[in-house]
Length: 372
Image (cartoon, rainbow, N blue to C red; front, side, top):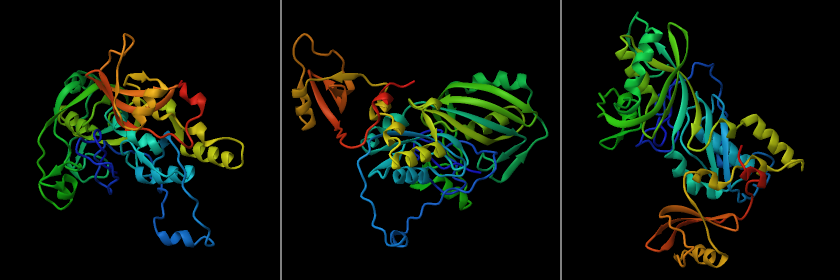
């Protein structure tokens, strides 16, 4: 099994936000659970006319985040299409690809939330993954071709002694099957064409790496929390080599993406049930949304008056006056009467709007502004 490349990290820095075909595996390992057929999204425009010539519903403005607990067997692109259909939303996009054969958190931005995607993608990610010892594979995941084998298996003590070497800022050589560009070509395309791909090492930061469990001599379960650009598949490969055996990823679940953790995730079947209830008037789709500003948890908030808000909304700078003027500088998100207005830069005595939000339409329920 393989992972699609993601923007950024365990997603790679040069990876784009597209799902790629099998064996691209740029966002960490595979998954040993049984394969499930992915939901298929029919992009044929003729399909609009094949269901009794029913007219297409007009898309609506929906603004907020849905953190899907993505099931195994669904691509990130398919997940976005499903949510866009369920909410009948005009715009949607995800904040970091998750492979079809991996499960866990896939933050999906709807409407104006798409303007905050970079803040999520630059955040930390946490993964729980299983390494299978004894084999190294060309894709560093379970579906690659076996390139080396060993009868040796690491002890728990040996694994624990190794972990500090993979914590902090380390030099890491990305997998050959990754979305990194080599002379304008994706590395995974060159590798599939049989070319020898040599990628330069680069610094990545691993904040935590722990051994969670060792079910048997052939497998070890780890948890990693890392920054942008880290490849978990490369961790499995490198640990296996140093331990005197070989290794590859055989299971993966993402449990944290930026500000979004497991408490924010909603399984697809629950989301579909909520949509059915909303359609019958028994609930609201707003209950599934997190506010747009949830993605901006690490950024200071700055409240302004309605008069200043009107200027910022028109894209005009606002001067900071008086002794009560804020002393912060840099990027802030601006609110008026408790409502998100803009992303702005504060400096040289003024607020300069960079991205203005127009939150007209369906937004998160009031209760969802207070997160657990």
